[in-house]
Length: 113
Image 1: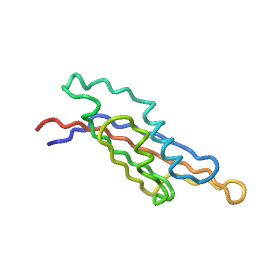
Image 2: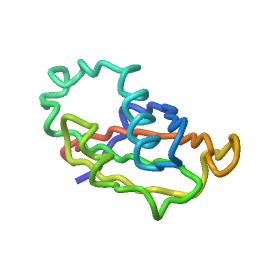
Image 3: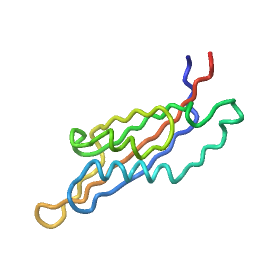
């Protein structure tokens, strides 16, 4: 099997209060999904369930991200999610912060080779 990269989408999500990396990551994935409508599957004899979806979310504390919860934002495909260090934490009044996550979603299909 050879996976062929078909789509790359990026998104950004924010948790304004609470420093919740999972919430910001889910919003980043949701943001990325709003920029796409995949309609090429019939052209290649595939369905949306045949796609492989690799998600990378960048947050200040990747260990705090529930990757299974982030994966639930994606409706189709064979999904993998990994959290990496990145994003941005903006201090806000005392102990609170605004947490910004970035997401990259890459869609592949098997070319049958």
